[in-house]
Length: 253
Image (cartoon, rainbow, N blue to C red; front, side, top):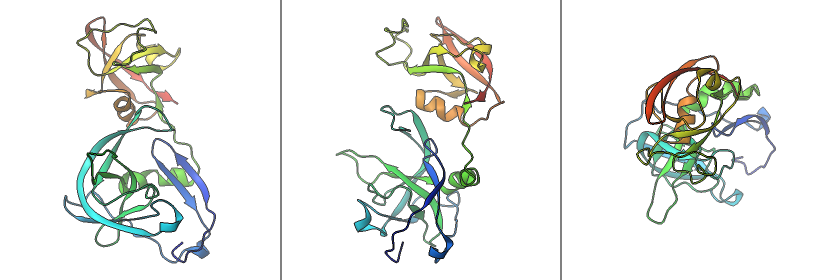
């Protein structure tokens, strides 16, 4: 806390793909409540601040500043400690310094209103000042469910998939045309799921969902998770060199 007191918090709900959690503490420790702002009303170049604990408790409450560098950035990352980038986040780009320990801290506008939740940054010798925050509108849209401990139910397509560039495809008995550079290849279809009922087969290459381009596994998940169980989507795929579109009704994961 700002008073340097360390207390325990209860986790009410969390989700790896959202990269969010809701924690609860006793109200006697709360001296102020943050005001929720709007990232949608912000403009490129607007001043932003972050508050966090970079490198741990010894630097708790550290404040950094910068500007809003970009909006609606699509950044590939990994969820649930996955080795590969299996998820895409639509985030705010900032140049305020972020370090391990900033994640989960607020991104604030010039008025001190929370406009985002600091989440990740790009790390490379050639990169400087590229941090990212989850827009507060997206975070708040899931707070009620997480606060009530309701498990987020992501819709299920009903396939196992690999990148079209994956070297293990030959091991699975799948060969692709050299012309196919993007999309995901179906390596297995679960019986009784929407994909199975729609006639999707092992070896099909999915290139679009509802006419939105699918570059890889991360982008497929991102597009898929815009929908809910029970929704029907159009899946465009390539089978033996021919393009076709099928309708798939999603089920619960």
